Length: 102
Image 1 (tube, helix red, strand yellow):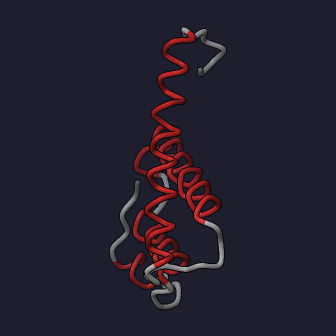
Image 2 (tube, helix red, strand yellow):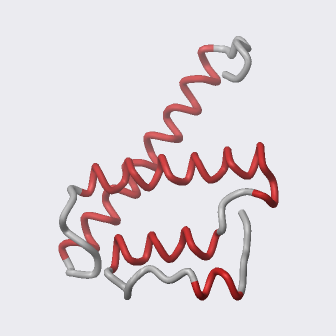
């Protein structure tokens, strides 16, 4: 999948099935949390799940290529908490005093 490598159709289909299963599970969890009023309802569970998976993929790639110089994990989690749960306003103070990279 990387650098024009050829993967077997069987492996590709297994990876895609695993990813689809994870996406479906995450979408269901978000939908249930929205139904219970535990998280934001501005976006559909499908859109929120797709965004979260894309974010996770980006964080993993950042760590893969940048290592400890990657994303500030505390700040990223703060953004996620604010977006999903409306927890306070974004603050750089906590991430500056306790930086933690992914």
